[in-house]
Length: 157
Image (cartoon, rainbow, N blue to C red):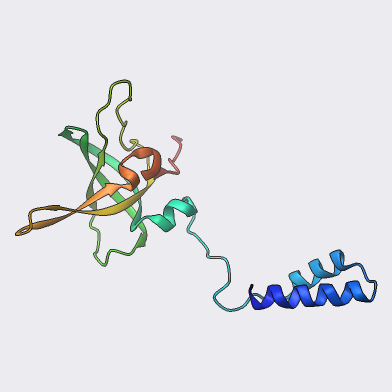
């Protein structure tokens, strides 16, 4: 239990003991008590989903330039990078970035549509590919699909 929570519980107990309405008083105390350093709610950039933002290594505002093709459930897309909203990868992104979706083909399961043509937020995870002698760093949409890897599509004006 945090220090603020313990303090509020102690004050509420004392208020109950002397017969004052603890419900109203505790809420007033909670509003007036500054949060401890490091316990403030994290602010997220506009145009992001907070849960996906936390899970992704990189979050970009981007627009589809063109599909690059693929096979066996892996499809590649070239994206125009508009803005970098989060970058925990330690590398700089250029004007374009190739990303992929990965989906095992199954009967009755529709194919992933890929990123939309409009500006959108894409959530990326780093996948290591290639060989041991020549490893490659590849960027996959979160969970390998657009349902998890794309949000906040800008509506056509």
